[in-house]
Image (cartoon, rainbow, N blue to C red; front, top):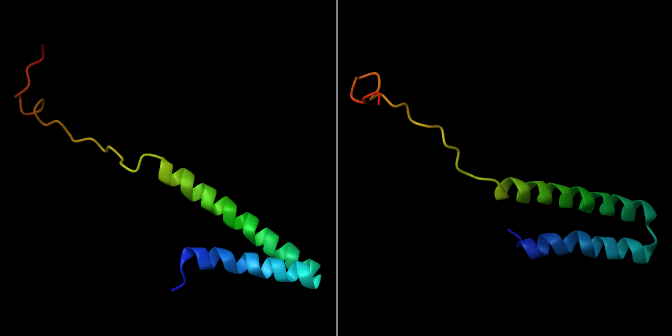
Length: 71
């Protein structure tokens, strides 16, 4: 399984080759793919930055069992 740096370098290498060869359609497609990937990574970072713990609360049965005084 390739490492993250290799995964990132592959499209950049392809982009450089496409520019050198003058493949304008390939350049546009790779740039669009990279932009979409950056948007997805930004969304993932935002999601990870949010609180991962959700407090669902615990029902307090003491009041219904008469164990908690109403002061």
